[in-house]
Length: 37
Image (cartoon, rainbow, N blue to C red; front, side, top):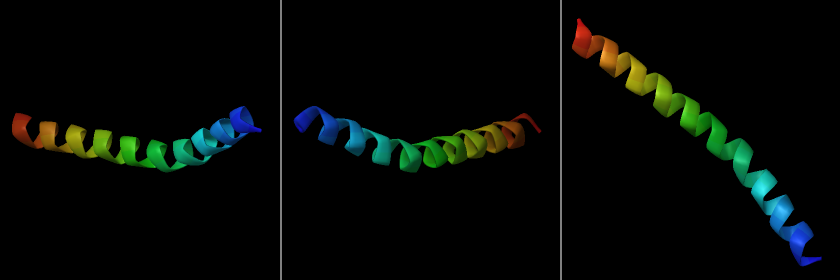
């Protein structure tokens, strides 16, 4: 029961973390491009 709970919690956390990571990466990329210009 416990291991399953941990797996399910990690699975539910990952989808929410992924979009945030991609948005932060894209924002960093755009800011870097602005600095280059």
